[in-house]
Length: 285
Ligand SMILES: NC(=O)c1ccc[n+]([C@@H]2O[C@H](COP(=O)([O-])OP(=O)(O)OC[C@H]3O[C@@H](n4cnc5c(N)ncnc54)[C@H](OP(=O)(O)O)[C@@H]3O)[C@@H](O)[C@H]2O)c1
Image (cartoon, rainbow, N blue to C red; front, side, top):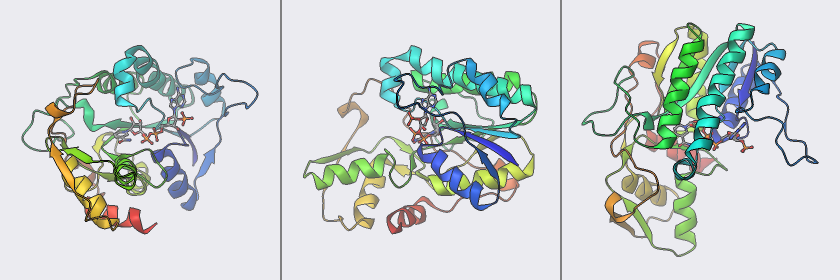
């Protein structure tokens, strides 16, 4: 199968490249940055990519590229929409042109976080910040273009070796001797990118399209996640101060409770291990 991965240098993109290459799929390289040209040649928000992508005749595009800095999206909602919504529309348009399937990686943040139990795939999204609404609009735009052949995979709190992620930030703060203050009232599912990539690799064989919730099993607060990060990395003696979202104002509104329930993937036998086991694997690499 001929596959394009957008955002291939990111946490999820790197993990997908490894898993899919190991499984013998052909990863097509998309035009990259030209070192002599300050303007990126590959920008999902540029309509020219519809032609660039479809010219490669992929059978599947896995769309991971996104503006993932949630507070950055709040500061520049136009950029968030350009990249996350219209960029996704461009990728879907390219898929339509060459009759390719599409996987769109989306987010727990499409929900408002006011539930009292994990969100199922058919629960109603209600984004409360610009990152979330741009990603939700991306889901809708992709679905408008692709009446079939579209998988939307929502995930949460992604971490992987070498990525900009929560475990890396907690360890950096602890090692710099800074106080580690973490919120107790933001709750979701930590997700190890290699586990997510394995799940996506299984999903694309099913041809059962639609919305999926793929995260590591179980959920926790950011505070509990930080404690486990420090414990498993041999820094369990470092204190973590519990705070609340109200103590830590951010440019972007935070949906407080957004664990995702993987009900549809489980029906196809696709389940991810508990997040604590995944975190152990992260520290073992
Ligand atoms: N990280 C999380 O906790 C999380 C949670 C839920 C859902 N997600 C979703 O999962 C997907 C992958 O996230 P990730 O953690 O792998 O993100 P990441 O590590 O921040 O990587 C993002 C990727 O997108 C590329 N990119 C950004 N803007 C682009 C543009 N205009 N044109 C082309 N490429 C662009 C980046 O390229 P450069 O590095 O060259 O800029 C990078 O390869 C995203 O769709 C995100 O919304 C992530």
